[in-house]
Image (cartoon, rainbow over all chains, first blue to last red; front, top):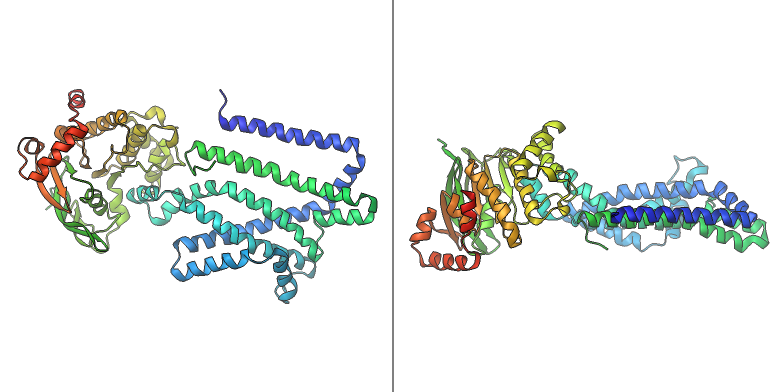
Length: 255
Length: 258
């Protein structure tokens, strides 16, 4: 009898194989599609992944800090953190990008002119993602039962030891499914970089469509497929698989 | 001065306007087993949580082998590492295997190496007859097994006293026996214990003294014999009668235990 998680992994492998095979079939049947896809990946993939990774990482650092402020901080810090969350969740990402790049001249004076747009987008993605990641981590930290913290303290662990060895390891596991979702959001939001002239996947696809008018719709279709390939398998693996694993450990209780 | 492992002197504890403990005192010698019982809301659990200062009392003194835990400059974490605690709801660390639940404090608090900690943890698991289950996560264990891991976790620290907070009251009836058996074994091998429980059979078998707590004060104390033959206060008589109807006396368990 196979365990739930093993079954899941097996079906996941089938899924990946299915995607790869249908892509290959598609490319053989329509060689043009392959050309478009390689143009877009060559010119835009790196930028998309870079923006996403940097945005997520900076959002992670700030998000955890905000979550800690909201849970353990003094009243003023709590207000500050929760105000930040509310504010940043209310501003469109493109507006943020414009603010950092054009609204606040001199913000990136120490960065080479060529890289300023990237810095602006990363800052916008990171600051906004932090507002969401803070919620994710706050929920995860709070869902570690207080009884476990008591048990740790009763064994003689210090507050910080019980946080590091008991609360945090569980909170990170609990946060992973929601965090994967945040990845899916950020990778798609990174396409707003198009607005400040960075060539990432969306811009590359658009450029291709402009150069070959008759393939305009097709190239945007390819862009869609590429985003899908970079989100769906990952959210499925880290989101649903992790959920199953957590359930096995009796953690979280989510479906 | 200290023949006493634990001395609790005139403990007062209130939450806002609610007075939970109103001057409770008792003391405990090495290898003694003290059973605390009484109606719900009488402050039994609060008393235990006051002893290791998870919930510090407002007034009173707590001496652990002569050291006043309420005094200044006391390393509370070190003191707590010498007071084991077993919880009603087990409170095992969900992300850790049984053996790691036990070894983590040995490593982080007692600073043992990984090998030493694992060896000690396994020994403790053997004492609660769960060595085979060392690599299981809490969710893969029954309630009774989880509580035995909880006991092993306290035991492995070599504490001077172990506090049990209603260790069997969250368990299904058929799982209570295995936990009580482990506790009986511990008591008989000379572990110093303070046990909040309504398991009269356990109390009768190993308690050196029973304390009846009601509305935040000690209403009556004495040997199990005293309580089962001639309790003085009417409150206690009533309570014991109800308990016997509810829980039985676990005489079968006792026969096995002897």
